[in-house]
Length: 386
Ligand code: HEM
Image 1 (cartoon, rainbow, N blue to C red):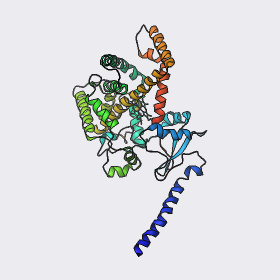
Image 2 (cartoon, helix red, strand yellow):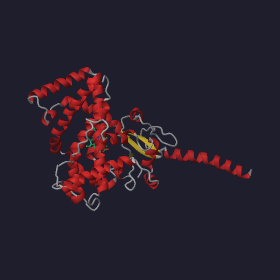
Image 3 (cartoon, rainbow, N blue to C red):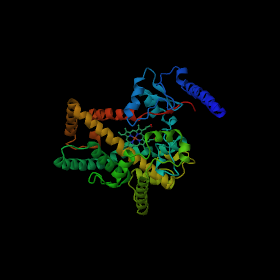
Image 4 (tube, rainbow, N blue to C red):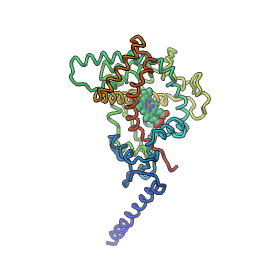
């Protein structure tokens, strides 16, 4: 009886103590007069939902003249940037200060997770500067004919499919297109996913995106408690995905090194960073190379992996949404078509890199979708209280 009374008293005392603890933590934004999304004990203001739109919507509803909305992840105060100029400052002018995406990585058990998107602090800064040359306009121009070649294959595949199918899963077809593009442009690898919907690159890429190792809740906890999740040896990448990808990258690197092949692509940059810790003739050479000496093979593979994922998933989603909106908005579709025809006429019917850059209305149409995607992707958890 005595013990029961003690336990009862403990519970009676514990509940208000926990409540007061959360109340104190959740007063951070209120005390500073910042508009915020009302948190719920214990998970804060971030609803755990696969539907990004649903997650983001509450913040846009709370949007005011402030450039950001206050929120909490568990008890940590964070901000969600809602003003475009403010977002631009974070991403461009001040990008050097915002190094972390709040995504955990575990290089011991999950080597592919230690990629640019998940790395933090100085390690991210150094690697990021070293990899920036990947996206110079010269390199983009150099890749353009390859993209066109694969776009032709896309057109052929679409033509074939339309002969037998009345309805099409456009997202999947576009993901096969972007998988082939990124495979060829970044790694010089023929992924073959347009020809074969079950090609290995597509199969494992799809698996990684569509069947995450853990549910959203665990995945989020892993990001909030990275050290603990590392201790538990939790991973984000399926074993077979890691095996496949590491194998392909190893084969490619070995082949290129053995045959002294230089293709001026992303893989080329990574191989240089593996062998020399810098890229020939690039500004990245002067960076503090104490932090990133040479890339290990695992680090190289992790960067290849994130370019592969970033390269096929985001672009195919943007294209899918663009096509969907174009189908719904005939007037916009007509304007795009008119602009394409007009520019192509000027370039004798040939789609070149320069011609594409003159298609401003088309660009804005895709960018409109891009920014929709972007906003939904862009919940940058800016840690406030460190
Ligand atoms: C429409 C297409 C795309 C969208 C909407 C998109 C969106 C994003 C967003 C929102 C970020 C986070 C930016 C930040 O917080 O600083 C990001 C980072 C990244 N993206 Fe993309 N992306 C796209 C295409 C690509 C492509 C084609 C590649 C690779 C070829 C790529 C590779 C990456 C990488 C490596 C990062 C991490 C950069 C870093 O932290 O330094 N993305 N992307």
